[in-house]
Length: 467
Image: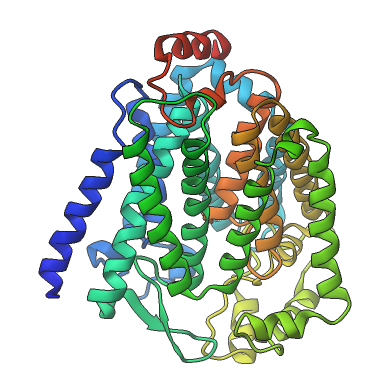
């Protein structure tokens, strides 16, 4: 098919998905478009790349970044903060309910003091709080569950089909070459297959959540078939894209997250939520056994990977380079200056800018203190997700899936870094779980399929709970 004709077909298909998934009975805030725009860019390419704006001659991209991207994120951040200030009490309630996250970001800010590049570190910290600010836009909406659904749909309906379009009909844009192996890789709208994999799998979990809620609703929602057709189509397209991306870590994480969501749908799990702990324990034991008892080579082979991964060599080289084991190099400061030059010599052509392990990444940037703080967020997130599952099993299973996949994904990728989709959706799961666990978000299960059922009642309940 001619690329122009294919583009027209895909655009019509995307419009059709939005039309099928429409729901005029709910009124989420127009501010929801701010996190949607945020994810569109994070899940594709920087705005400067889309506009074809190259850095000025002599610009150090690592230190200075792009003025176009900086202006774009600054505009989104200022607008989002303005919305949150207007929402006042709701914003404050969520902030005070998530102490571990606040402490972590506060320590990141303090670490700017001992960074070798304090100005760069501080600018990146400001950029990093954009992740939390955009999450708060979603969870402080008058109808937070409806806002979450629309966030998934508006993001997924754009990124997933267009990535398939780029790969198939615009190979000069949708494909590249893997710096690790030199083989051709599919990157879709993104700049590499790993980013394509992670944005696809986090959106796929959201689509699966919608599909399961529509297949087995607590009460039969109106227009169920067209919503199911839209979300089912997105799920099929997303699975196809995830396989095409050939990102082993993201594929494993999706299977893990989907497995958690499907198993927790069982009546035995819902009648006895404590079984969730048994499920998680089995997953942890299985994963640990693979790592500790020599199963890594078999798994790597099964996933089409070489057991002698270059990541192992990178980890051995960078861990001793941490300037301070206790507090690290400072927030987002390790991959700057002379250290990056030394790594360029040790690993030519790889252009390293991350550790490809979330826990090592935190150790390098924030030391053992940072690892402890991340551990507290992980434990708190899991505890709240389980509590949310007891109150709202359908949504709780999604939040639990994000918590477990964040832990798993970060074993081979830097999953706890700013602007990373898995980090954003993990934080979203923790913050959203806090509202369900405390009873602030009520009636979530009734909103999963479509909120037109008892819409006035649900709006009133949410308004009472959020004020």
